Image (cartoon, rainbow, N blue to C red; front, side, top):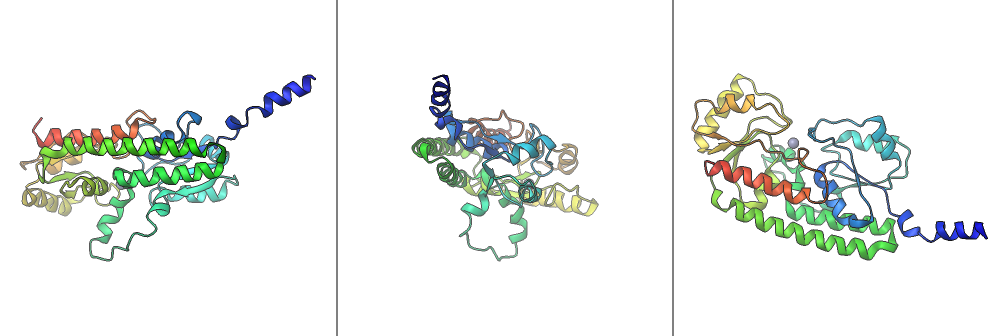
Length: 292
Ligand SMILES: [Zn+2]
């Protein structure tokens, strides 16, 4: 009798027990996954608060969490090449879902001379709300595959998430409207997807590729670029030393804006982060352009 009761208790709640364990890499992916999972569960995240999305490593505790995951939603090997190796070597059952590869598979190859300069930009694809919407669909698809009982819930959550992303995009358009085509300069090549989505003009970036400090020649070129482009604002980044931005901007007419956080690692992690990430970027850019 007692055994029967225990069995009923154990078997009576398969829905909860079968919710896939989800691990994510960066805050935007975590936020989107949290929205798709909704009340069913909470995804884990590898990037620590305040950390640089390009330079973080897997801790032993995280390796364990990764080995216990059912699904790993991550941007892809261009951002965290070590994660692919970790997933291979960890011996877990986790299904790897590199979102950029899954959703950009049919994108035409960019063969022009600027392809290299835009490669790094493209890694930050989460800054394009259209891409985020595609990722939400991809997540719902994989969650439903792993947990068919809750497929309707994931689908409804995904619809809601995409409505929220669309509303955020409209809010960002409104915030950025006064900026128009006034060119800005950013710390590193991270904002291409954001600029393309919202019609911002980015005259250039200070750090080449992956946050390397420029030499004297590059500094001279950067000052010339700043003057020639008529850039109104130069933006430091929250994870980077602002001294470089001050050096480059010295003696030019450009203003220094509030530090931008393209990964969102300084924001509070959770379902609200994605909207907060885009609107915060937009507000900081608009504030500097308006001289606030
Ligand atoms: Zn980057």
